[in-house]
Every structure is written in C-alpha cells, then in structure tokens.
Image (cartoon, rainbow, N blue to C red; front, side):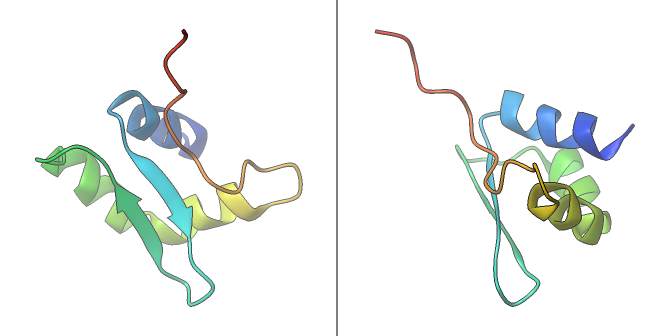
Length: 68
C-alpha cells in the first residue's frame, strides 16, 4: 500500500491526520479507532508526515464535510 493509499484509508475510516511541529502525528477520529490502521500509521509515521507536509501536500488530512 502506498503512503497516499494509507492516508486515503485513514480518511475513509473517518480519521483526521495532523502532523505536529515535534515530529508527532495527531490521529483523531471516532472511537474505537481501527487497530490495524493505527498500527500501520504508527509504523509508517515518518512517511505519512512527509506525505502531508511535502510541497503540494494537504497539510492536514480529514474526512470531507457532509454535503448539505
């Protein structure tokens, strides 16, 4: 699975991913968080942070707001 696919899987699961200034990755979403996805994000944290913060990256990955 590519990093982009991993980030997309997290978004589809309702998670928000936000890189911190201290090299941490904040993961928020509905409880309980999918354990397999959390394990993968943890193992590939540096890749995910790099993906989110690269030029042209999204910065913060979050689920789309519901349409009204």
